[in-house]
Image (cartoon, rainbow, N blue to C red; front, side):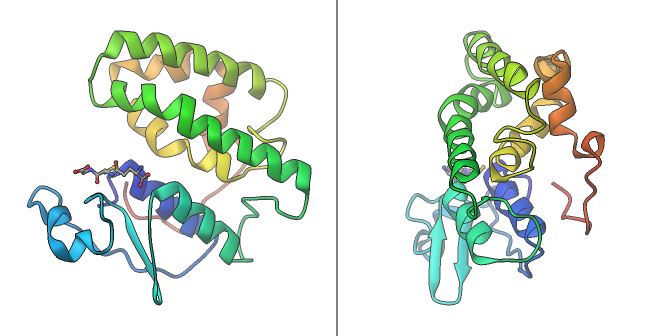
Length: 191
Ligand code: GSH
């Protein structure tokens, strides 16, 4: 289901790499993600699950890295031709998974909102400082590290906590690709 933030991470990566793909819906409200057929694709009974020929993967960040590595086309999301830039992409991908995702996840799903708002404030203060020095997280280039944040930022912006993003000028300019002069080449699925 493209409304899933983890699925959106993979879809955005496929779009950036201009890869052909088929999105197969797993009906979560009907419990299809817990059926044996789906558990064979993702043993944790979650979406997304990803198939490429005989290769089966799960965990959206691992899938996104695989897609970004596999295709030469589209945006260079990993900067693997430059060890220093690639290391910075890795740093900010780990920051997303370990510092950014836990509090924004809880806020978006309305769990322990105030405690996590305070945590996310601190994380976003680090981002504000970082993004005042470079256009994107890993440097002056758009990478998988930026992309990996956007599904949850997009969701947070539909909640009363949107000001966490909009009150920080550099963070707010960062998530909106149009402000950076980037334009989607194709229309992605409605997230
Ligand atoms: N760490 C996993 C990833 O990045 O792929 C998280 C996947 C995840 O949380 N998927 C959610 C899901 O399948 C949808 S966004 N929820 C249903 C469930 O956990 O039963």
